[in-house]
Each structure stands twice: as structure tokens, then as C-alpha cells.
Image (cartoon, rainbow, N blue to C red):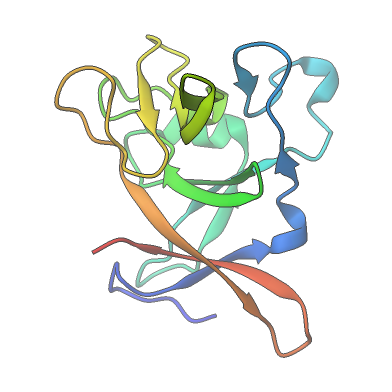
Length: 164
């Protein structure tokens, strides 16, 4: 993959098989990523990626590296929830908390699932994963486009680009 200066160019986030499907937990909120010390070496169900620029290709960031640069460098959080791939900014647009530490939930109306959301771990605000709309105030979470493509080797890859 070559680096691109245009934010509307597609870039590869990894093999589709590296994004396990996150299912809703029995609790009202489903943790996106384990922060327990005992789980630090486990494969996490989401990736924090720095999009490509003119200088570098897209690269994956550890949770700690992402924490140190959140708000300073653009970070994209990519994961699969209920069978659908999502890519959003890793930084809460309100207070810049790292959303990789957040919780996922279903947006329901009388038991009918209408959408999915993420809850900021810092202050509890939530954002719709499809529209980016906040539940409070005028804050908008950036939502990225995702697409699954077949590689030349026959592997499914997840591709991401900025929505225009």
C-alpha cells in the first residue's frame, strides 16, 4: 500500500479475520477493549490505527502509545460489532478521551435495535456509530467508511477512508 496525502483515499486496516465480532454482553454495556493487566497480551477485538500521510503508511498503535498521542495525531478505531465493521475517530470530540476504552451498546426503541453506539469512558456521553451524533450537545464524532476487499492472495482485507 502506498501512502497518500489525500484524506479521501482508501487505506488497508488489516485482514478482516483480525477483527473478531464483538457481541453484546449480558450487561447493559459491552467493553470494547480489556484494560485488565492480565489481558494485556491477548489479541484485542479492535485496532487503533494512525492513517497514512505523505511521510508514513498507516500503522497500528498500542493502547499506551495511543493514549500518549490522543488529540495530537489522528487515530482511527476499527472494530466489528454485531457483524458490522466500524471505523471512528479514537478521540472523543468533547473532551478527547480515548474511545478504545469505551463501551458499546445497542440503540433501541421498544426492544427494536435501531443503531449502535459507543459511550465515552471519561464522561459517559454517547455517540451513534453510524452518524457520529452525540446524545448531548452539538458534538459530532467522525465516522469513517469501511469496505471489505479481496486481496490478490484471496484474503479478505478491511479498507478505510474518510467520509467526504
